[in-house]
Image (cartoon, rainbow, N blue to C red; front, side, top):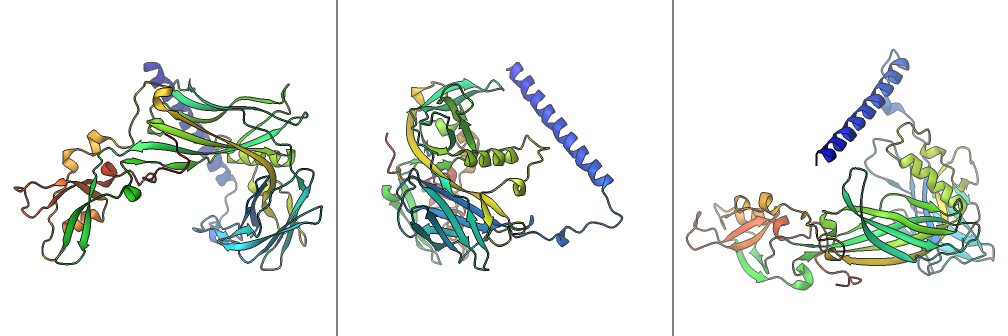
Length: 421
């Protein structure tokens, strides 16, 4: 334990020192480049560049393409590019048109899949008359996920982590390039589950309430299933390896005591096989996104895109990439007892948060106002019927904080269709 604390303190000191160096660097830079008159940031002219997210795969489906525009640093909303004309053409004469679905999302009018040995080009014409096209992109050879497993491994801070690893073989003898995404879903239990709830019959004076049985099709049976998507860019390749094989590549790490893996956990891994240009784009983007690389000279505007303006390529720049990739997926389930007997921390501390001190006994109505209704509308839920002799005398029910008796703030209380217990 002392070793762990020493390592943690050392890491904290290193982070503080690193931030202090960065602060000093910025401060000196500002002093050396300071002007006599104060600098007005509001006068900066921001270039309006098109932002494109276009990923087409060998899945037969309605594909989507997202368009937006760069915004000032102090903007609070994204600038969606609407009313554009979007299409994808191939070198065999096919054209796939995309319709505006709203909020900058364009959906293919028909279902289709990207095919081998075919070149695809993205075409965009914005509502202000600007025209853009991508370079022709081809689909790389597909690869399969052969294995997905969970093991316990200690990290650099000597903390046990449940680590998810994948393995597989590529089909391209010259090497393959991969990008991974995942959706994780985990089962959690409501700490204090009650099968009844308070139904509001009248929300105005005279206020009326009743106890009813919870419908399991709406409220579940005391469990919830949060789902989260990966956010990091996960890349690997086999071109620089001696064999065209991915072996135990780390996808996800979760502390062993986390409630994420407290009962039952599932991960859906998606493997995208990329061409070299797409892999290079994500590699640069990943470098820019790395918070530890604080002095990186890579900027978003410097990351090359395969989409350019047909009219004024030096002025009308594009951020994003037209990706054509092969996709395969694999789902993995495990119960906690399958991998560890160690205890885990629940999402809420029952002893600290869901104790008797947090119980409320609100009056049903007082002076035309309902303290009971007010608490029900402010994250409290039914715990028990108040005893006949209680204070105040017209306190009909006892309430607890909602997160103690309802986990739906974290995820759906209804079991997903793919879930297998």
